[in-house]
Image (cartoon, rainbow, N blue to C red):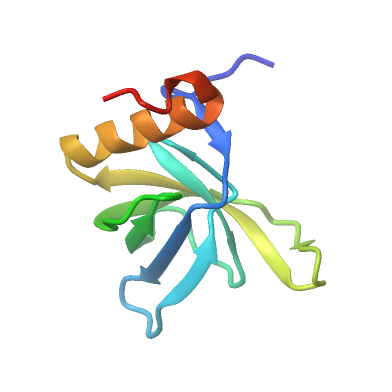
Length: 122
């Protein structure tokens, strides 16, 4: 299978608080994986592709969280269960607005996690 991603991703545990626009409630989650172009999240409810998502993300050991706007790119139809037995749908989120500086922060973070010797990279 050919990888079509524009950016590399790493499996991760970064924290995100998301809100589906037009729907009540904000929900904290741990990210399944992250790349400079988006996230894969374990969302408990069905969300239509194209739905807009507001989010705040905290990268591991990063003191400053940042906000962004994204859209749902896809969602698995099959329900999965986490280690505690909680049901969720794997959901791909594509960043629409995160800002250039924040995208660079994500790229540096991915590099630091995938290459431990680069943890001091600017």
